[in-house]
Image (cartoon, rainbow, N blue to C red; front, side, top):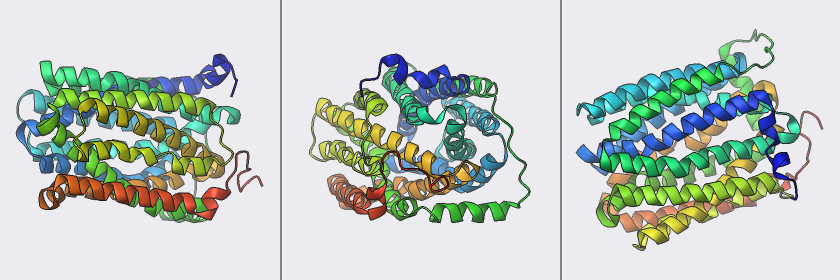
Amino acid sequence: MGLPLRERLGALQERDFRLLFTATTITALGDRLAGIALVFAVLDFGTATDLGIVLAARQVTQAVVLVSGGVISDRLPRHLVLTAASLVQAVGQGVIAALVLTGSASVWNLVAFHILYGIGGGMIIPAQAGLIPQTVSPGRLQQANALQGLSRNLTGVLGPAVGGLLVVAASPGIALAADAVTFLVCAAVLAQIQIAPRARVAAGFFHELREGWRELTAHTWLWSSLGLIGFANMFYVGAWAVLGPSIAETELGGAAAWAAILTVGAAGAIAGGIAALRYRPARPLLAASLAPMPMVLPLVGLALAWPTWAIAAAAFVSSLGLAIHLTLWATVFQQHVPEHARSRVSSYDALGSFVLIPVGVALAGPVAATIGVDTSLWVVVGVFLGCTTIVAAIPSVRAIRAGDPSPRSA
């Protein structure tokens, strides 16, 4: 806990991790700019339901590509997989920016190019999960995960603020174009990473899929929590990504208020990332399972019509807990899943966690229109707390302790 700053940032002394960190920081900044821009680009000509359709198109595509992305990332050099994925996303986002800037955007052409964008996104998750441990020494693994999260969250403070200003003062298309450029820069940096070549894989595609599934089911703590996490995410993301901006547009003053909430939330994530550099719980997976519980606070604020500053404060606490959760979960995952199958298991993990999100995003608007926005938010609060509590009660989740060897080295 008392390590000097140089020690806590020691992962950045390792060349390959430093390149990965730089690349992901650049693209994270662009994504934060584009996130708020896309929301209000769609709301300029459509409804909350239209926004849900656009977001769901990307998320469905990512879910479909994830498992294939895991196999590819366990076969090929993972940094090159990430490079190719960044180039695909650059093309998709570049066309979307052009459509918005020229006033040609519609729900369906945005859906088409979000599908292309989602193909790249589906490759990134398993490739990056497997690449981080290849770029840093084992003793610095949690530190590297914390720094990755801290990078995303630092850019999250600047990105929504600048993105909100661009939406108000200029056009959402400018922010979307900037995001496309960051993907090109990211690809150029990733291509410089040098990692040891991997053994050639002779097994067939479906054999590797089955092998990845067997590895997943060998870890009780992992498979037993996936359904609950996925169910909670379906409800939560739909409410936050669709109903949140809609409430901001109608009750809080529009893009500026939502940008302020996201910016303060990102500051909370920075605090969580800093805490994760130092935090070493005795039961890391249990701590990771409990840390997201404050995420319901912003939804409570939206349901009770809190002022913008109060919802922003709740978002700060929410993001702090989420940042700690992500760091601890990723570290336990990387320590306990063997390298040769890490991307495939990561793809199943991500699929289980996120596959239902497009359903929640697509249905959030219609359900809220039927039962009311406030009722929808309270249902989400109850589901999220219930699922989180059950995950924390799973014996295998509670059993993992800091310093436990992985099953392969035990």
